[in-house]
Length: 304
Image 1 (cartoon, rainbow, N blue to C red):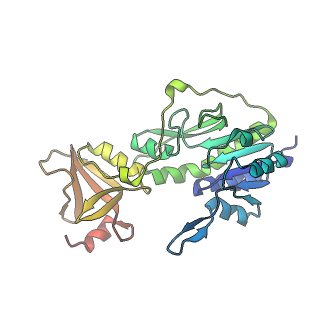
Image 2 (cartoon, helix red, strand yellow; image 1 turned 60 degrees about the vertical axis):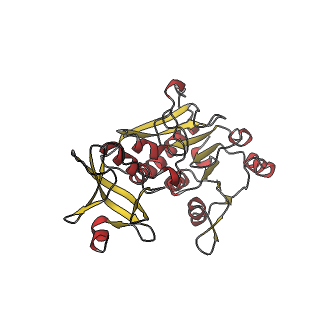
């Protein structure tokens, strides 16, 4: 078939999926976008669309927002379109009756080197675990989550000091590139599927705010990785003056000491928290009820 005649359905929700949406639409055209229903947000609880819906509307692409993916009306709508390819990025788990509707294949773009870090939070866990390399994997959808046969896999080094937010922003445009390339090889038919090694599979479960209180009885590197791994969301936190104190970015100093773990020390315009083998030095923080700020700005107005 002619590539320019391909019918492609795109499914996704957050900011991470937007570069792929834009690049696929520019390369082939997207006939339909599927995303979550608008949700109440903000103080006024105003119905708010997903970032993907906002971008799709700007691009004049039709949008479908099913409440349930197993709804017969939605499934029939996808079958009526009879897409050649369904592209899924940061979306829900599709039922078989949906992902088997694609004439050629339905594929997902996942921000890890599968089979490592299967699940909803691969970017976070790669930073938490101190990985030195990351990557993007496209794979054919099947019923087992993140376990389908691999189409393409691209690998990249993780720069020193990256937070999960940094890695997210680094990978998002590249996810668009690998999505376009995957569409090309599927439409041309020149690809080989590779099975995932189940013995090497690891999980990347969702991380919740209550799991992000900092345990200062750990070494500097593990703490830095944890703080950066949950930055900016949900955000690592400790208690300072009775308030929740989030640390989004930090450095560290390995040094012997006898100071109680986690007791904030402020001296010569610098804040540091003692841990197992040294000190964590906050660089970007947020005190409860205030905006995110650099530590220097915080300390200028801080009165213990």
